[in-house]
Image (cartoon, rainbow, N blue to C red):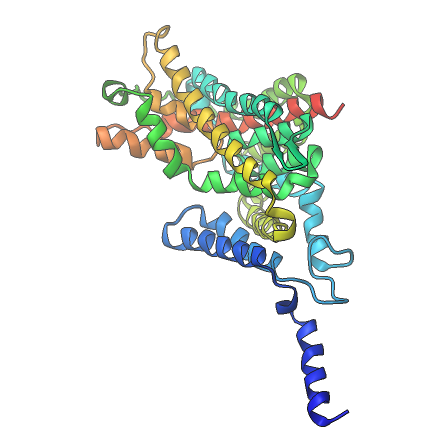
Amino acid sequence: MSVFESITTKIAQFWETTAFAGLEPGNVIMIAIAGCFIYLAIAKHYEPLLLVPIGFGIIVGNIPSSAGVSLSVYDEGSVLRYLYFGVEQGIYPPLIFLGIGAMTDFSTMLSNPKLVLLGAAAQVGVFLTYLGALAVSFSFGETTLSFSPQQAGAIGIIGGADGPTAIFLSSKLAPDLLGAIAIAAYSYMALVPVIQPPIMRMLTTRQERLIRMKPSREVSKLERILFPIVAFLICTTMAPGAIVLIGMLFFGNLMKECAVTDRLALTARSAMIDIVTMLLGFCVGASTNAQRFLQPQSILIFVLGALSFAVATAGGVLFAKLMNLFFKEKINPLVGAAGVSAVPDSARVVQMVGQQEDPGNFLLMHAMAPNVAGVIGSAIAAGVLWSQLAL
């Protein structure tokens, strides 16, 4: 063998060990999508704490493994596989709920309990999308695209706009769709300021958007301490499947409100939730390998997820309008849009849209009531779907 042939062989061998050899057009498309996520996070400030880890994770997940080297979350023995275990087994979402509970103030909800109904009404998107996913059936040549009841339930929960809940339920009912559902859920959470305002304006009149609600009453410390205990008992007796998510949520809230576990509450709502959010976002992104992710199913999941989120937003707004027919003290229907559990972004959107009509109208605190109720509602909806569909 000549020197030239030897060098050529070595170059060919080196090329085969690089990721370039296995790079496919789908991987390039996914890396471009990751770039869009990172751009939206940095330039537009759309949920940067979620989109930056997910975006970079997508880039990592679409670098092909070379021969004999385990890199992917799907490769046995890969370090990423061990990190992904927390997603696959539904470990990370309850830890995030613990942190959410430790940073959530339920006072606005307790001061005006009827607003809880708006958080419940927004869950209509979950169950209507579940039925819609069951009814979907498309044929591609010899392949028929449809969803099982378990997959339909996991897709429906996207309407709750709660990424951790969507991941938790998907890991239990449809682990094969976990990546697509998680990306869809977090994408729509990040796009709350884009998706919700047109729906809110379309379903309300200017006169309704100008409604001013009276200030909330002050909630006592005893009420705030008793609430997580009593609410946990009520919620989990109705939906035992939600015990893990609801339990961690209210445990975190009790640590916050009892005022004797400040160090634990501070850790839960700061360092711990930040660490888990980083790992969860990165691992979810890394799971979107193009060969597994770029399928007709994923596109359909994104479409159904968008419809689910839109229906959930509309459900909250329309239910607020219905409540105004029966209550003397009127509710600004915009507040109903906060019934999805994208905390606190949905409440901020309500404030923004309300102040576009009346700069002196402050709806943020009122909107936080259905917003935090939506967190509870989406967890209960997930528990109901899990208990019914896991049979």
